[in-house]
Image (cartoon, rainbow, N blue to C red; front, side, top):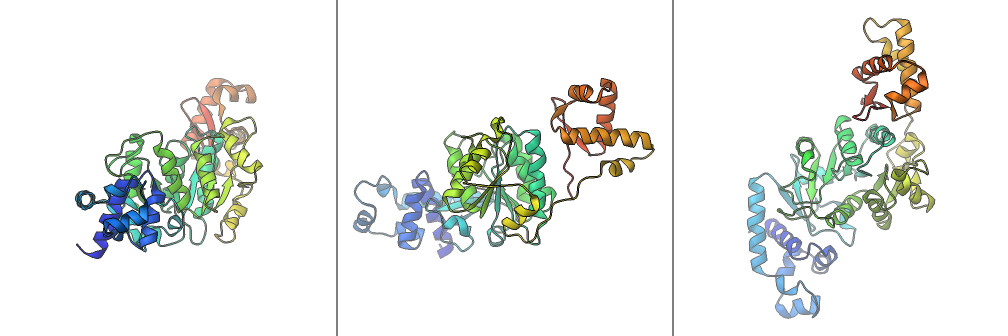
Length: 387
């Protein structure tokens, strides 16, 4: 067994032994210089290092390393990778965290060096119950980051709502994205995002990663352990929407605890989905996102600028056979939707005074040309155009 493979096998074994106590695993590696050195200690030395009450001491054995080697060999056959804490390609910022995992399982078409060797990533996180406000601003924020001269990867958790919106926006804008999942690398959670995960893994510089061993099923406690990797791997975290005690808010607090920059999108004070953002802003634990240009500059990505105001009439004017009167009416309706994101088709009738059939017909045209989106509840929002 060569040195690199031995180190990976040893780190993998430590994940199995004390994965739920990452400080113990990374502490041993830091103390001895490598994961393999942990398994080469004599019993007396192990006792001196770990003390009499350590619950992991008796599990540090060659039997655990043999099982870890078999696991990594099987995963390699499936196209999955693994990196250890001691390797240069291990995420640098994550390594600075005292609860960094002993290793990471990776599913990607790119080598680890290209995943974690460049500009440190930025995490974009938030609620599963994303509002039209969040649906609009999440891709706009990712798009602003993507416009930087050397854009970083976008990190999130592959969950419903903000997470999947951030991942898909990153891919749409042509920048890498990393999904940190709360299950084993041989699974995807939620299962309905398997196609999205496949797209991420096949995109250059993108990956699905986890510190959970294969076969790990979903459990409520998995999310907090997953969230600390999202926060730790990123130089900054942006919270889009989250309840006061939501997972996104917890990730942002973890990031602040690691000494990383935290930004939050301000929301209405009576919207439960913005309670976490507003709380962090009130505590001065996060900086407000008030301008996309200022956000890009604050992230250290160079001079940023706010996008120009959309000219709906000009976009509608490109529709074949659309006369001046129709373009005027359609652009007016688009402006009403822009000023009232999430407005329903019924509410549009009341606001505009137009018949329901007319509103449905006009909204359908706006949706077909990519100006608005209409969800299953007939709520209308402006579609964020990708470049």
